[in-house]
Image (cartoon, rainbow, N blue to C red):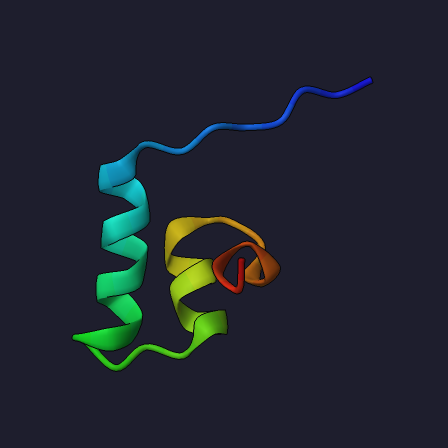
Length: 42
């Protein structure tokens, strides 16, 4: 059984900032952060 990775509040806010303030798409932001794009939709 794998453990779920936990992200800090700062990391989450940075991810949102990439999309809302800098105009990145979900896929571009996910690649930049090295996470799955589906994680940004949650």
